[in-house]
Length: 112
Length: 113
Image (tube, rainbow over all chains, first blue to last red; front, side, top):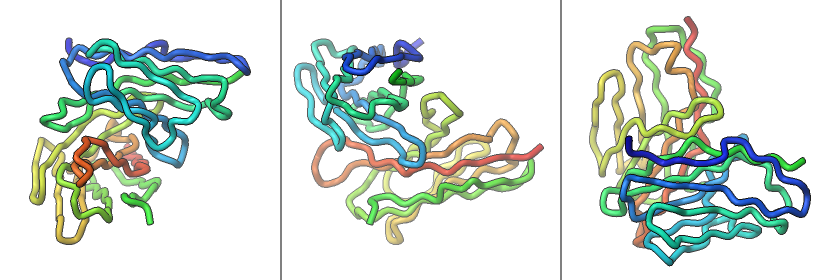
């Protein structure tokens, strides 16, 4: 089945620790996105990538980093510089030509 | 002013009712419009996708786009308890040439059995 797989589903981070969220897609989509979802604030764009080895900052990139070494993979690292990382993180992808975005099932990150 | 405005609800309706969900937007360059359904603690699921103005129907769902008014709607006919979820509107295709998406904050819908 084609789709987007995010792992893990739940993640706990200690203060001062970096953590990496995985996102893999087998839809052969060129573009991939990371969003953060907080209650009452909707989806906010962290980073996006339209082609391999290229990515751009979104609206709230501070404290996050990404890489795009393979077309199907777009991991997100939440660094210790992100002061309020507890949130629901969503990865999405789209075929740039057709524009509909498809989402993974999300990773809930909690700072302990 | 936010680029996209969406009433957060919650909206409670009896089973079988017709539901109307709406978004307004400010950027007249948007060309692509989407509606997503999101169940609690799950990723958004694409329901409807339309290009430019007009209507699109899929089963119990109808999406309408009125670009002249910068207003989009999602209608759900014969609503079911399983439709209880948060509905997000999204749009893209602005003049920057990138395929970024702008999302509404979502409307929570509860269909009562």
